[in-house]
Image 1 (spheres, helix red, strand yellow):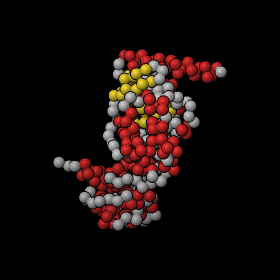
Image 2 (cartoon, rainbow, N blue to C red):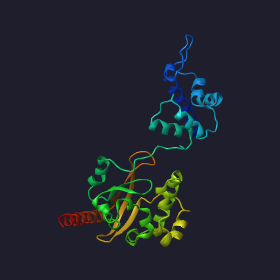
Image 3 (tube, rainbow, N blue to C red):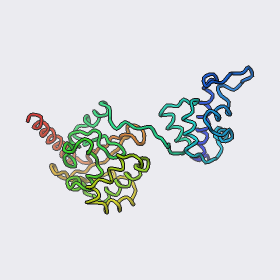
Image 4 (tube, rainbow, N blue to C red):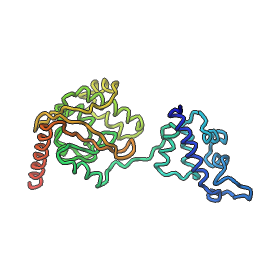
Length: 289
């Protein structure tokens, strides 16, 4: 039975072969001789143009069981012969089983269409956030679920440091230790791919986090696991809520995701409707004032 690595190797071989055969020699400055039978480029030509050894490139197209470092797919994607777009580059690194040393930058903003999604969910608290736990968009109910989301500046709307430092946020989470442990573990795992980015390094280094909860955060990072789906939240306005935490990715792994808290019983559903009405009433007062 073929293993996952076997399938990836053969998919990688087919991917490289198809890209090599679609490039005409004239397109990369080569002369098409009268005896050329190979559609597109020859293997040695593809290897030369991508600065990869001929033997190594041949083994890749033969699906040999070899260890591929990140330098090889990076050289292939930088070569003009493959003409890969962003999605194809990501696909190549996934097939090679190697992390991308220079992943394309992801836009931190969201489109108006994506921003409208949590707004359309009505009383169900929902937000769009990225892997750094930055809140990119949210609806009125989510804005009052853990405190006052409208209070902080846009660049300060993040779930990590309030979870360790904000009394209102912490009071809303009934099973706080488990939630902090999972959140910290996921953040540390996501941060592994952004170690040189100032925005990521600035978050755990914030004075609030170091002063109030560095010990708790350090212990939490040793724990990993999945976020419990069923949660109990204690909202300051409407009381106890029994909800299911759901996450839907809206793009690549490191891209934005839609997070929602769906009520698990009728009483929680009614209380979320009350919370939405309270949030709407407050917003109207603020606008009229």
